[in-house]
Image 1 (spheres, protein in one colour):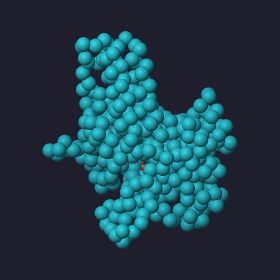
Image 2: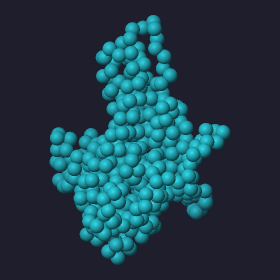
Image 3: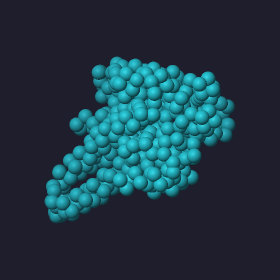
Image 4: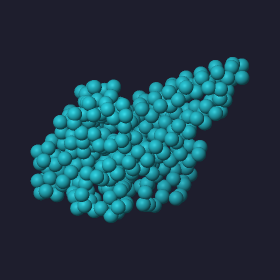
Length: 369
Ligand code: MRU
């Protein structure tokens, strides 16, 4: 690895590329916009830099943005000083207020992935509890960092479990199509939808992955194809509009995708284009699986209609990656996500197991257990 005079680090290609790294003092974030050509870690020191990295997709994928934001909150309070003119409890209360302020700010970076709000709420709840405990200001700051580190570590374990459950659904020799990137790059490790592919490889199960390139920002081409190829998984890149053709050829026996938010009724928001894939899968009698941690299931959002869908800049469509491909001034509609109604979803795979219809009932049960 080399570091230039700006402190930006780059390294040659490796087996496993981690998207979020806490280096003991700051957040080193893989700039996913530069993949697959460059592996560059950005040294982030402030909540604003983290907010900007999330908004501009330097870090993306529901669990990864929650993890990055949690570290962002810590960066926002790590220099907070204790005020000796007020009580220890008043200092703790002030620090909890600062955590809430930073969390509320980072929550404005992107609207759809509920993992972002889940991680930030977790820090808020922790510090509210700590106000009542007889701990020092320094210990409370440390507890915020420890929680961020735990969110990242738990995500890795969670994804492994998701991968194990998902792998039960696949058989040796199957072709599996995925959309967007729900892999190691979008999480702490393994990914959600891509986890079974890594586990299959460990266990000697052979699966053939078809990765949709995923217009307009090409998470499938730049990220999924990259990370699976790096790991030696058999991956074939296709254009989004080829998904139907490969299904018709019987090359695909299952679809698996990640999600940014699952509503209480099992409707699923994911990268734009997911809904089209789900409809195609149903038309071809192919199961459509959604893999996610429990933290992506939002029982407080009743249906997919209630999920806020981010709209992004027109330039992603009119001049993606610098080349203008549409006329100046043309009207553009660019939602980053769509909602797949639950009737298209064969099963939702979580770290607690595989959930099938009726989703409203079975998702609620999962939280009761
Ligand atoms: O806009 P992105 O790249 O953040 O969108 C990511 C996705 O849609 C993923 O499928 C989803 O976040 C799940 S990641 C495990």
